Amino acid sequence: MYIIAGLGNPGGKYEHTRHNCGFEVIDILAERYHIDVSDRKFKALCGNGAIEGQKVLLMKPQTFMNLSGEAVQQAAAFYKADPAAQLIVLYDDISLEPGVIRVRGKGSAGGHNGIRNIIQMLGTDKFYRVKIGTGHKPEGWDLADYVLGRFPSAVQVTMTESFERASRAAAALLTEPAEQVMSEYNRKPAEEA
Image (cartoon, rainbow, N blue to C red; front, side, top):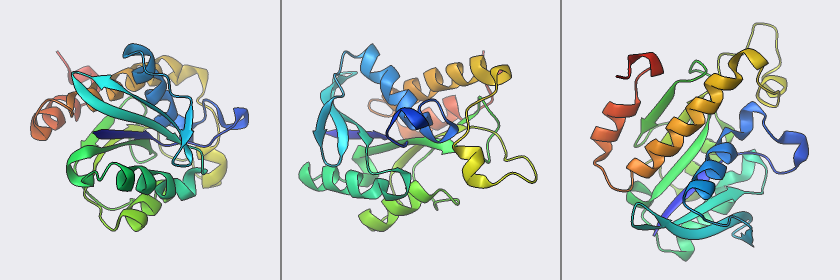
């Protein structure tokens, strides 16, 4: 069983904000693979199904971002999942330009409180991440205001495309070697053939 967790904050107030990129990608995967993500368990909205022939749990933690690890840890424990092989986390990254995604197999939290909490709760930093670039915080902005803000119309199309690419990267991690997925997706969209 693979666990694909998209990070975000619950409630209409936070819909389509920079911090909810993970939720956006889960919604794309749920629609594409006909998985109903409405079961309430593991402190998350969850749905079981299959992606590219692999059994998956799609989840949107409802703990608020900073406690995302509570939900992810409960699901990993229930399914006896090995995070290094069976967990994929989708989330926003302000150090990447809008439209850029990065696939990684391990690493630090990089200042992301949701990832920090997951590492803390799991006791490991070895799990797959698909980072979705949201752009750097403008000088003088409060970080919380920036990540809880919505994308300007100028980058809406770019972000929609990056959510699609992130969903394909997550699906690819289920069936392709991680190095191959990283090689394919860790490029700027303009570099793709």
